[in-house]
Figure 1 (cartoon, rainbow, N blue to C red):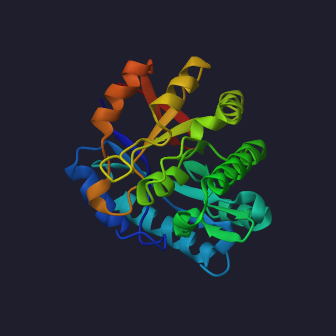
Figure 2: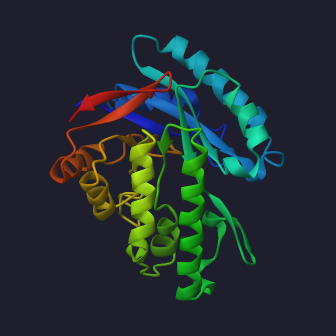
Length: 272
């Protein structure tokens, strides 16, 4: 199976710890056929994090590395757009920087009572189970609204808050209490012709799960969903292509016959 990692971050993301050149070298060492650099464009922090400058720098680095590694690795221009609806005008300015190969859509921040920050920074230990379930309900509502905006190609890490809720804080929360809401989201993904990302970043951590997990991927397949991408969400070069082989085997058991990577905003199919 040819391996394409469709979700990685360089130092042009605030939490990135690898240059684009580091990504390329590691991808070649790991035998990847292609990799997408998709740095963060978090619209909540558009001004404070100098997002326009960061994505401009990311694109420049990708162009330079693509020239150097031409013939050795397929390198794609991506961006992970978060909270598009918070500031759609400046989000569109980001999307005009270049002809991206893929735009990832995600939600990292929601306004939830007194909690107003990225969920990776929230202290879920101080929340009651009821509050956490209300938080997840609000999060899924924001995902559904994002899908209605339809500016992107891939919905990323659908169940990402669980990486912190159940991984970091070990709360044992079951998101399938929102099965109806999740089904609505999956049906929107299918009807809008976008891909659902299978994010492998949690595998091998205290969370140790795909995002979304096998249950949700099974529902997606049963609803007729076929378009998936593989993304390590790597912020360090050692995590590129994380658990792709075992993930491919799981996906085959569920009924998927392959996955997609994007070039020029068009999904390209790769058989397992």
